[in-house]
Length: 244
Image (cartoon, rainbow, N blue to C red; front, top):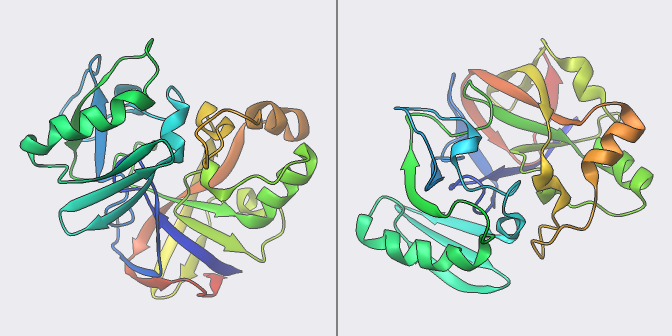
């Protein structure tokens, strides 16, 4: 198995960026992945991690899926095909109105509006533990062939994409440990998917019923697995992925 690419999403559901390498820490998410999240006006937040229903996200606002991002120090630059680029500081209250104005046209009128940016002491992943999302290129190829369309990796918002793995073999790895570079991760559970994956990440428009296809062809709506970092270390694109 080969680590084909590494991705992080500095602001949950608001962009993605590729990394050449990254230093993982035991018990933590990929650094600065879902470091911030955008709470909507109906959110009921508690201290620390909160479930995804409290946040603006692609399942409810598909246009968000077309955002790309770049993190540079304390600044994030967001890009979208229908909006001018925006560079701002997510933790600077003076920058919040600019962000809210930028994202407002991407939000459906019948959904709770984005209200503020929050963060926890861990990434706001959709798992209730600090996770790294591992996905398989061969599984994506298999699903794409069954649907008759070339599905982008960006529909799935993964962190680590694996190549040279038999289709769907990642599900058989649950409970096992794998080594990538200097790090060791334990595969914990499948990722059950939401409507965000139905949106084209180039346009932000719904164009493929991925959930129906997963259920029709495989009997579930799962794609990818969540892993826990149990030994920290640097990983890099092109690293060999090996069982422990």
